[in-house]
Every structure is written in structure tokens, then in C-alpha cells.
Amino acid sequence: MPAISRSLAAIDVPAGSEYATRVGTLAVVAAVTDANRKWWVLVGTSAGLFLLMLDSTVVALALPSVQADLGASNDQLQWVLNAYLLVIAALVVTAGRLGDIFGRRLVFLAGFAVFGAGSVLAAVAWSADALIAGRVVMAIGAASMLPLSLALVTHVFPPAEQPRAIGIWTAVSAIALGIGPLIGGVLSDLDWRLIFVVNVPIVVAAVILLRIVTPEVKDETAEPRIDWPGLALLTLGLGAAVFALVNADDWGWTSAATLTLLAAGLASLVAFWFVEHRVRSPIVEFSLFRNRPYLGATAAAFGVVVTYWTLMFFEPQYLQNILGYTAVEAGLLILPLTVPMILFSPFSGRLIDSFGARATMTAGMTLGVIGLVILTRISGSSGYGLLFPGLLAVGVSLALVYAPMSSAAMMAMPKAKAGIAAAVLAMNRVMAGGIGLAVVSAVFQSLLRSELDSELDRRGIELGDRAREQLDGLLAGSQDAQQAVSADAKGLAGEIRQIAADAFTYALGNAIWVLVGVAAVCTALTWWLVESKRPSAEAGTTAPAHHHHHRFGGFHI
Image (cartoon, rainbow, N blue to C red):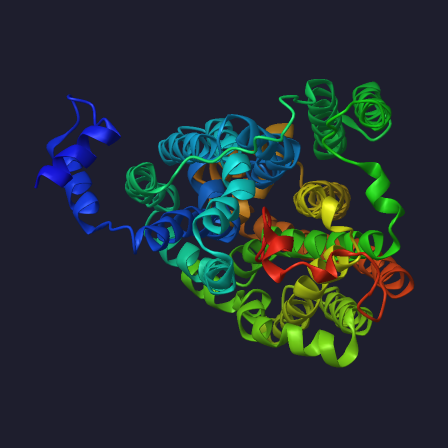
């Protein structure tokens, strides 16, 4: 007991804490020993990773429910995902550097707590904008958790045990991605707010655990420099460009607002490129892309991640709003997109050894293109029979490309560049999801608006501006949408809903051709740039496998 008392004093539990917190803390302290401390660190960091990966899929299944409950437009639904991706992309490298300077445990726990606070805001959201704000807060926290989770694990495990620990950590990531749609469907059918509520107790428990068991570690060689100008320009550039794409259909593609915002975003990104070549600690070292295999891996990452996020955004809506499945059923039916990553990942190393990274990745990318072409053929009456082979082909594509992609990129890098190369690759993956989703969604919205206007005019149905804006929500069962449409076209709500459903399907099938084009170009770049054989030069091939995953690993999509 004296040892427990000293441990409790060391962790400085506030005098005003709740009794339950004290009891939980006491139980953790009693269970921790020097021998098992590292495993408790793995448990706590894996809990954070599990929430991050789970959150990337469960939210997509809840979007139709969110739309029906909060009356969100398609643009707002897109921001629920895109705000999360773009904030992480802008902050993730800087957050990792803050951990090196001020302490990885401190920054990780701060990010974990912020992620929990954002979950609370999202859970109680009273409007679509409030939900988006909650997602932004969650992303600020996630940007710290993503780069530092594995860094904390590798610090407490000796080199001989690191492969096992990293294997467990990676498996947690893959499992969360794989089962996320099913969990999201179950929770959404009960109440979509539960997908955020469940985060809170896990965050509280994990923060308490990690504060007790995790030692602080800093990189004493890290320069205390943060690239604030680069961070500001990157955030402004991404935000302005994506905001213009999201709103272009409402404002008009040639309107002054759209063109001005796009120009401002592109100008900021060009300025970012110049700044990064002149600062001592850049967010992105653009010289990395002179390495052909690294550039090829980045191209492959762009193709598969854009595909993943776009399908994860649209297909649950298609399954629920058009084909009429419940959220649980949609969660089950979307699993062919995610489960192959769990099933095929154990064989990725064997495939690379047998066929080489280039052949494995190119085969996977080609299979993805085939799957996407299948998905362009969907219609309101095609049913799941057509959707399944397309989703499965893309899911197997993700499994074949993801692990070889990281290996091809990191094996071609000198060991001294492994850390920043992994960080930039992870940042590019998240950024690709945000930008790609914005582009495909802009095409989708333009096609949807054109098809709706054409069909309504052909049938002589007149709707006011408010009713037309509410047509998105009509498919999800929004009461506001039903009232708005009924007010303008009494007795025609059913016919208008069918018009909206047909227009949605038409727009989605044709917008996926953008993905086909992107994936085809990325496939060609992968074959051209990625090396077939493992390089034997001074690249990081002599480093142990865990070295390449020091900050970013697993299935971080």
C-alpha cells in the first residue's frame, strides 16, 4: 500500500476529482508493474489509434441519419468528412514536431483530450454547422495522436520486442477500419449521436492510463523551430481551394466568388512551395519527390485514398437513400470495401518478395480501375448485385497497394530521411482524401443540379429555391425537406422524390468516371516510377523494419 500511495502522489490526481476516477486510477496503479508497463502503454495508444481509424468509417454510415435529423445539405455533409481530413493534413507534421520539442506524451495526451472534447461537441450538435465545428476540434486532436502513437510504443519496447508490438498496433488499425462500417451502422440505427458518445469514456480511461504508465520522451536533437509561415499558407491554401470547390455549384463555376477563392487558394499553395524551400525545418521537404520510387508510391497513395474516401462518402448514402437499406444493412454491405485489408495484409510481405513492389501495386491499382468502372454502371434499379463486385475489387485493390506502397517509399529512402519521408507520405494520404473528395463532389453536385433542373422542367414541376435546396434531404427523409417540397408541389412529393433518386444515381455513376481517370493515371505512374526490386544502395534497407514506422504506420487512410 505505501508503494501505491507514492504512485498516486506522483501522478498528482486533483483533490476535486470524482470518486470513480480515484478508484479507477488506484486500480490501474495497482495493476501496473515494471514488467508489464510497456504493454499498458500499447493498450492506451492502441485505444487512441482504434478511435481514429474507427472514426474514419463510422461517420460515413451516419450521414443519411445526420441529414434527416439536422436538415444538412450535401455540401454540409461533405464538410463533416472534409473538414476532418483537411485539418489533420494541415497539422499532422507540425504536431509531430511539437511532440519532439515539448514531449511526445504531453502532446499526445493533449491531442487525445481535444479529440474527446470535439466528440462531446459533435454528440450534442444542434445544427450541421455545430457538427462540423465538432469535427474540426476532433481533427485538431487527431493530428497530434496520429504521428505520436507509434512513437510512444517504440520508445518503451526494446528492439527485440518491437516487431511484435508494431504488429499488434497495426492489427488494431486494420481491424478498426474493417469493422467500422458495421459499428457505424449499428450505432446510427440506434442514434447517430452515439458514434461520438462512445468515444468519451474511452478517451477518459485511456488518458488516465497513459498519464500513469507512459514516460515522457523528447527528441533532444530536434531544433525548437516551427514552420509557422508554411503552416499558415498550407491551411489557407487548402481551405480556400476546397471551400471554392464545395460551393462552386451554388455560386457558379465562373462567378467572381469561386474564381477569387480558387485563385487565393492556389496562390497560397504556390507561396507555400517557395517558403518550404527557404525555411530550416519545413513541413514538406519537396526534394523527397525527386526520388522516383517515393514519387511513385505517393501517386499510388493518391489514387487509392481518393477512391476510398469518395466511395466511403457516397456509397452508404446510395445504399440507404436509393436502395432503401437500413444503416446496419448498409454497414454490412459496405464491408467488401474494408474487410479485404484485414484478410490480405498478412500476405503483403510474401507478395512483395515474390513479385516485387511494382508488380504487386500495379496489379492492385489495375484491379481498382476495373472495380470503379463497374461502379459507374449503377442505377436506381441495379441493386446490390452490381455494387458488390465493384466494391470488392476496390477493397482488394486497397489491400494489395497499401502495404507495398509504404514499403516501396521507405526502402528507397536513406535512413536519415526515413522520419520526414514517412510523415510527408502520411500527410499526403490524408490531404489526397480531402482534395479528391472535394473535386469528385463538385462534379457530382454539378451533374445532380443539371439533371434535377432538366427533369423537373421536362415534367413541368415548379419548385421554389428553398424547395430545390431541400431536395438533398428529401431522399434521407428530412421533415424540413418534405414540408418544403409539399408546400410548392402538393401531391407530387412521391414523384419528386423519384426524380431526386434518379438524379442522384445518374450523378454518382458519372462522377465516378473522375475516379476512373485518376486511378488510371496513378496506375501508369506507379508502373513507371516504382522499382520492381528492393534497392541495395544506402537506402534504409539495412534498418530494422520498425524504423520505417517510427511515426506513421498501419492502415492510416
